[in-house]
Amino acid sequence: MPRFSDDMNDTLRDFAEDAEAMGFDELVKQIEDEEDDMMLALGPRAYGPDADDEGGNDSDGLFYWER
Image (cartoon, rainbow, N blue to C red; front, side):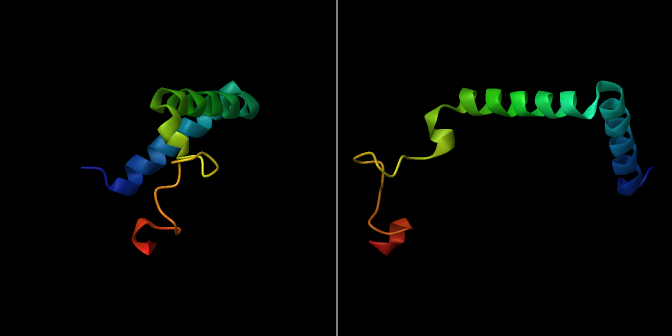
């Protein structure tokens, strides 16, 4: 049975081969696009409440227990 590090090395090697074939700039763009899609799918809560909006801040302090 392969060790975890062998599996990780294989995964990283595959990733490096894909990155080289695709070109680094294109890979970065693809990852950023996927991240943007994920954040949009999560909706506004993914970005957290807007501290400037009325009711956006649930507490008076940085944490809810600092009321």
